[in-house]
Length: 154
Image 1: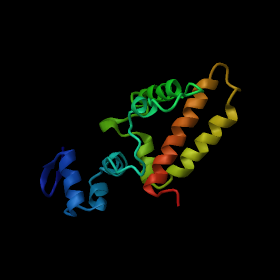
Image 2 (image 1 turned 120 degrees about the vertical axis):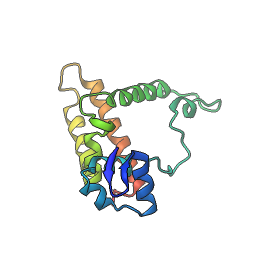
Image 3 (image 1 turned 60 degrees about the vertical axis):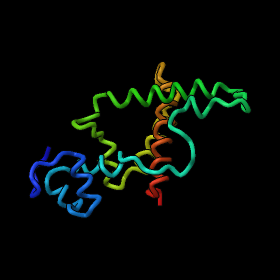
Image 4 (image 1 turned 180 degrees about the horizontal axis):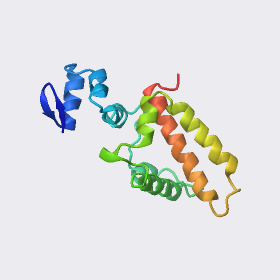
């Protein structure tokens, strides 16, 4: 809860006030809630430009497709890896990640593209970390797709 001219506010109340225009994004930042603003902007569910579901197993199972290269299993592994990143040391209070702040500053595209290059360049050079490097590349590529769908790649 946060103090404001409206009294104590819960997260969902702030979202409603922003959506209705009763509180500006500048006021949210002035209240010291830049992390919340980043979460509001980038974690709020948005319409997806394609018709793919987030449930990888549902999308990958098809009577018409016989996957030849183990894609279903690999996508499930990627999902497990991504899920694990939401519980690591760089997730702060209120589930705000450093990525939220990077994305809210407009630097997300460069950050993601740079990390894709970094992990691709070191692939095979770190003992036993090659598979994890590939998972990181795929994760940053998904984040880049997310930013593309938001129109931030321009």
